[in-house]
Image 1 (tube, rainbow, N blue to C red):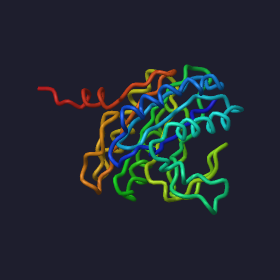
Image 2: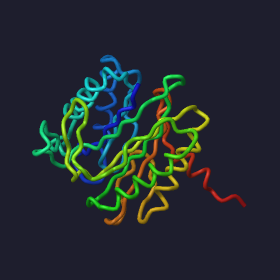
Image 3: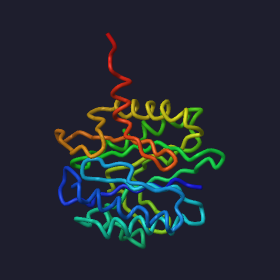
Length: 241
């Protein structure tokens, strides 16, 4: 089984996603499970970008990927990142962000998903995302983690190619058991926040930061249930007196 994750800017503005866009995407998520996805959800909404994630058997990966893109197209207020997808590498443009990881079939599928939004394509966002990947890569509770963000042309199974201009990365790690979700997610969030000009936000928070900054949302996708990790992270880091 795989965890497949897509992030895209299909909003009508540059700072937030409308409630109608969010609601319409959520209404179409059951199409993925009808097609064969084990579980699927709108897992992150970060500034003007949103993320659809699904647990899927290996042989259905391409079908589910295509359906995720179709759901985005059907509900897009602005085609935005969808226009960057191409059938051939030479025509690829700034497109959707993508992450993929294997899932441990011996436990309920749990994962951590971090999604980054830049206002002006700040290039250091790649370093921030890769710092979070690196933090999770050596942890005992991690089953698999997505490939590093490289800034190269990328092929997305069943969908096509996107170029190195894609600038709002999404990353994911799959977890060996529920008890490890907290430790892995907090390590990933901490690594991201240790980077310059990076701010953790709750899901559906608009991008109200000075340009030159990056915002990141963090979600736990636990057997189909989605938890916004900004809330427990805020509580965990509160200084006790």
